[in-house]
Amino acid sequence: MSSDSRTDVLVVGAGPTGLLAALRLAESGLAVTVIEEEWRPAGHSYALALHPRSLVLLDQLGLSAQAIGLGRRLDAVALFEGAEPRATLRFRGPEALACLLALPQSGLEALLGRRLAERGVSVRWSHRLAGLETTDDGIVARVHKLAKESTGYAVAHTEWAIEKELTFRAAFMVGADGHRSLVRRALGTPFEEAAPSQVFAVVECGGGRGSEMRLVLGDATVNALWPLPGGRARWSFELEAPEVSAGDRFKSRLTTQMGERHFPHLDEARVRELVRERAPWFEPELGELGWSIEVRFERRLVPAFGRDRVWLAGDAAHLTGPAGMQSMNAGLDEASDLASRLVRVLRGGEGRALLESYGGERLAAWRFLLGRQGGLRAAASTPPFAARNATRLLPCLPATGEDLGALAGQLGLVVDRG
Image (cartoon, rainbow, N blue to C red; front, side, top):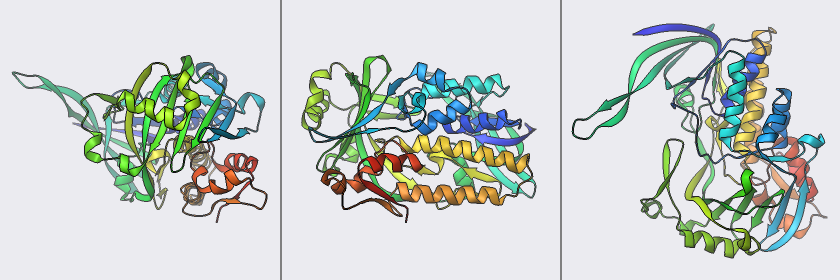
């Protein structure tokens, strides 16, 4: 059974990137439909912090005050080399927004989802993209509406089955459906490794009493501390390659669910050892551990952000490590930029070259962030700590674009975009 629906823009993916894109489109008066393969919003997530630029985007939508009320304001970034403090970085911009905001992804999604619903747009959960065709005047998407189906006799279990096939016709599609993007696959776009993957021990714990995010650089690792709302904190400890064994990672029977995937817990003794080794000043604060898992983070990039009437944003197009929270925040900026260009094409009559330039600009930005083109360079007056760690700091500073250049400048580092 099938039926047809028409809309101006079909957004695939209901994470922060997709929701922000849809909201910007809806606020501009365009008809927008959002589909999501998952059956509900995410619970646990890695993404937990908003950069100042992301707060500006929320402010443009009248949502920054609500977001700040839900999260924890962090006014600075403190850099350590082992146990030694080296520098403190401050953010520029309007005082109310010149900060990082520790806010779990689920809280941001709820905020954006509520505003989108107020604009008459509801996420179509359990809707999976099944096929995509591009025509001269738009796209035609085949979508499977999924439903849970109980099977088994002696032992019942639940599977997902196709309840109905739908057809959506739209002028454009936004692929914001994450690292396993079906939109990207439908385009036939590779998702190539841009830099070696990294493995992190991700730990939620007590402590984190201050109002700053902390980066701790060891001899061969980068570690990040994010204070969270409610007196909690999250550490990301980079693990060296010899510590990582694909077999060992999955020996534990204790798991934590992140989205639809499960990861093994780390042993508590190992977590406490990591704190003693890399941040001894934090050990008195550590307190009770929450969940702690070991995760491999890929660093990947598409060769193109889309073509014709189908464009990517967020993790569908790029992946990086968790220390600087760059991927989600860049995705929010991409969503806002792409949405504004789609409005200009659909409402303002501008040509689709505007979308081609979106793709080129974003690809160049990510080639820089992933160290494929240019980078952070030391000058004659750069302090030794920053000079010897310039390459490692690039993916770890919590900023992108001009804001990253401003943070790097406080360390005496110069941005070279190649």
